[in-house]
Amino acid sequence: MSNPDRLSGLDSAFLHLERDGAHMHVASIMVFSGQAPSYDQLLRFLESRLDRVPRYRQRLAFVPFEQGRPVWVDDPYFNVRYHLRHSALPSPGEDAQLAALAGRLFAEQLDRDKPLWEMNLVEGLTPGEDGQPRFAIIVKTHHALVDGVSGVDITSVLFSLSPDEEVSEQPPEWIPRPLPSSADLIGDALRERLSDPAEVSRAARALVRSPRRALSELGGRLEQTGALAWAGVRSAPHTALNQPIGPHRRYGWVNSSLESFKQIKNGLDGTINDAVLTTVSLGIGRWLRRRGVDTDELTLTAMVPVSVRSEDQAGQLGNRVSALWAPLPVYEQDPAATFRKIAKKMGDLKHSDQAVGADTLTELAGFAPPTIASQAARLQSRQRLFNLVVTNVPGPQQPLYLLGQRLTALYPVVPLTKNTSLGVAAMSYCGRLSFGLLADYDALPDLGDVVGDFKAALMDLGRAAETDRHRWDSAEHQTLFSAHTPDKATLTVA
Image 1 (cartoon, rainbow, N blue to C red):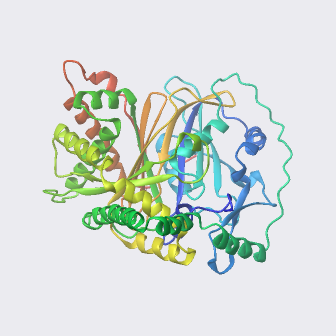
Image 2: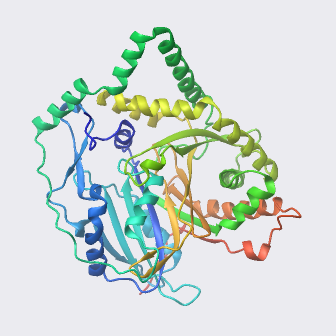
Image 3: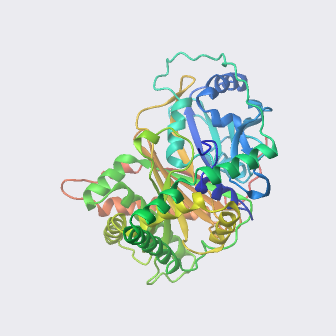
């Protein structure tokens, strides 16, 4: 029987991709309205709920000689104080300072000898427009532990639906399991390989029972995988988005009404995801032309992760993702025309072999020997199969509360791979949709321009989607909020 605590092939690949300045953690900035809890109060609260997410008290154990994928084991030295950090912004505590702090935190790699997560309580934010005090929490979790969709499920462990929910701060007793020895780790891995190569066994049995059918199915899966690979190889032109990255990061966001995206998709007959990708295409096209790039006939390729998590897997940690290669026609400056092209292409892709091919690669990663999987992951990081990653994760639409304080904004983060200097994550929460833009600090010193171009693109797209049935209320949709790491250093005098 396979070990449920062993990393999947995909989870393990995220470990191998973490090198040369690439940090494979997903993250988010959460902004709250109200008085910040004290550090000790938040600490006790976390301790009282960690039993609901056992992985948060586990670290990785690596199999000697790479004879198996790593396994999750209880950390006997777990100390929640290491994982919960405390920061304060200097006066005046503007959102740009929060973005700069986030960029610095996102640039720090998680320690693999400890559970792969960190949380930072941030005080010192300026009050909100309603005059209420604000605070933020910045969370990082390694991609090997959780993907974007299951990350949304984890927040339900920490948050409540009511500000008046009673909170027990008495942590239940936790006794860690003994650490396995090196002999245990390699022995378990070899036994699993011999006793439970489930897919290999099924394939062998199928081949014996019906060789013609089995070979036909295998050929079909190879065709699907080939379709995915060819879609990547023939795409991804070289741009300023594709250059070696360093360890440092800039971060910015654009926060808009979710209703804006609904009106856009209704007015132009598509989906919210089409509206998200169109905003990205229009925004990056503007930015490239500002840099003097000739965008005529230029189509970029976005790698769009797609959740394949079933309903009965909701709330489980680990990665259940596939991927599509989405074209971004940055040569097209007409918002409506851009939307139609992206909507048509995405509709075609959902019924093509690409998505199934990505699933096939994910399955194969689970059965590849770890040394081969490691080399494959490193090879992938050197290829220019896509220009950037664009994620779109639907979040909860009801208000969430932490220790009685309401979550007012949620800004997501997708990590950068070795040769991509910009990653775009979109996430909706409680009637708002936010773009989180993570950039390499040196490769994109003008991230502020990209943020501004996203805002302008969204407004242009909204106006283009206006119809007699779907009116675009400029006053309502002007409520765009944004911030980013300052392009130039400023000195704050206390």
